[in-house]
Image 1 (cartoon, rainbow, N blue to C red):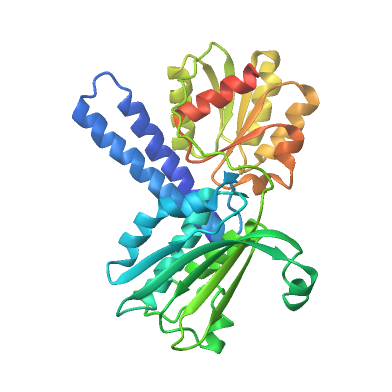
Image 2 (cartoon, rainbow, N blue to C red; image 1 turned 120 degrees about the vertical axis):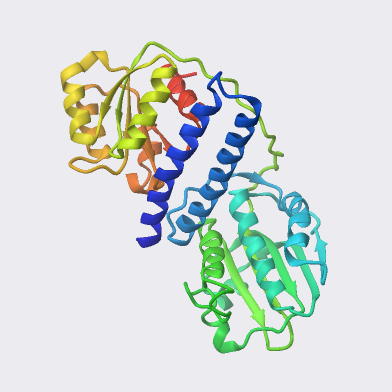
Length: 367
């Protein structure tokens, strides 16, 4: 609860930083040097956003952005970063398995888990050594599942991370996935790393094991269920700028600075904005203006009345009115399967201005 709440508050702050930086960057009066500095600010806020995703992962509240992933390609692309992170004293070897089926995964979270395990391996080899990352298809049959009670039968992609380090004693192995457990000095580790790895793997319906003995090195094995379809390489695409409009948008946001930012962004795009500071104000504004409202943008967590409660009341009166949610938390804060059942979208803070504009147009004028 603590880490999830911290991530929520940080995401609200990051939305303000990133949003105003984008507004300033679009100002015609800004010269090229200023735009470059603002671009660095925006990129830094994105890195900070990744840290809050780690907190949400630890608290099992992260929103997964899954796609079909070729693990061999993912690890090959990650190799250079891993080598830099572990240093020249560690020999890095990648052994890609043949016939490895793709998995449905959040690529960023899998990269984070692998990098964390590689950094742990580096720390276990202070004098240097050999770090091997290997992949292989794996079938969990009934016999295997009987000896591994957490395992389910099926086809998996297995990732092994093997080091030649100091190894782990049995009494330590039993606790390594526990939050805040660490054998490192206070200034060397928080004890969150392996619990985050565990959280990531479990969110992917996968499993993780560790095999180690003092002085004999350590092997972590990650088992991820295969997706059963061909991997499609992802391509970075710059979305086309979304057009604005003359519609009226009701915006409910309980953070004053964030409400001002959202109003400014939308008015600059040509929209008329009706601001509200909580769900109760939003519903009162809706009942007052009725058909003049073309779309409602609701923060999920608000005092007096939540975004979900306001949504339920508004939909009773006008079930066809487009609604978007926004939150520093994740989809879980709206309840299980709510978004897919109601066919509404959640914008995860911090989001880019263009992401907001595109979501609005798609909601008002569905493709």
